[in-house]
Length: 138
Ligand code: HEM
Image (tube, rainbow, N blue to C red; front, side, top):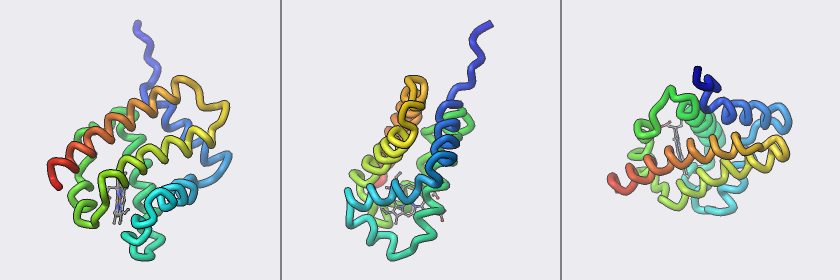
């Protein structure tokens, strides 16, 4: 029998562990995102609920791609709206990178090679699909 280890389990486990140890990662992610792109904060127009909802959608999408429920190539329906909001390509790549950086730093020694490899796999597939859609639609 081949190894039946669930692919993507390390991604979901790391999100749970982060939350148990540090609480919601959303504020840390947006703090870094706005520091890198001060103009991005203005695009939310002072709304605080909407960026939080967006981040929970992002985490749900990451978990679904990781466990195979969702094909990364189909997780791009939000791109057209974001182009209309004037979200830029560099904002997308920054956000994808920051999410992983915050997780990696928060988990510390618990961030093992399997976790790194699963996160890299999910985020590289999702960002490739998102950036391709962005380039095609902008
Ligand atoms: C910086 C300005 C941005 C604005 C104004 C914005 C706005 C929004 C809004 C209004 C939603 C729908 C939220 C809801 O009500 O559930 C959303 C969802 C989402 N955003 Fe953003 N966003 C921004 C940046 C980004 C970036 C940089 C990413 C890169 C990963 C991103 C990825 C997503 C995803 C994946 C969703 C969930 C799918 C959806 O609801 O369509 N957004 N965003």
